[in-house]
Amino acid sequence: MTGWSMFVRQTTVLCLLLAVALAVVLLTVTHQVQNLEEELKGLNRAIAAEEQKMHVLQAEFSFLAEPERLRRLASAHLGLMPVEPDQLGSFATLDEALQPPVDVGIRRGGTGALRVASARAHVR
Image (tube, rainbow, N blue to C red; front, side, top):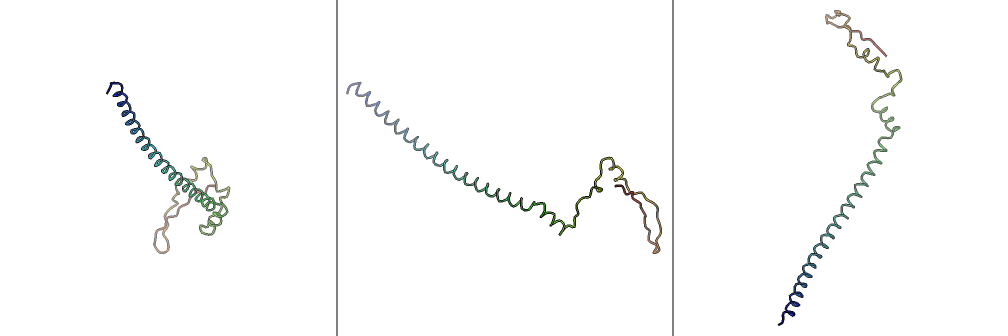
């Protein structure tokens, strides 16, 4: 064998080994890409399911937080009344409204029990 034919054989074997190695790498990368695509599809399905759940929860909240329904339930179960304008105060009247009760004195009742009479200033 001449040097030239030996070089051609070695180059051919090297190219074949390189082609096989590249084919293995290509198959591995293709397999990884397919796995990642399947994972992405699964995540997209999970996101869509969660978005659907959120949509249902938002619709349920909208129904449950409807003002007229809450008013009806509050009046039926809590006995709440709407706030009147004269019930509202300001920071200027806050000190007067938070004054501690003033003790008027101690009286003895008919049964001998002590009763403390206190007067509280009623400020609106």
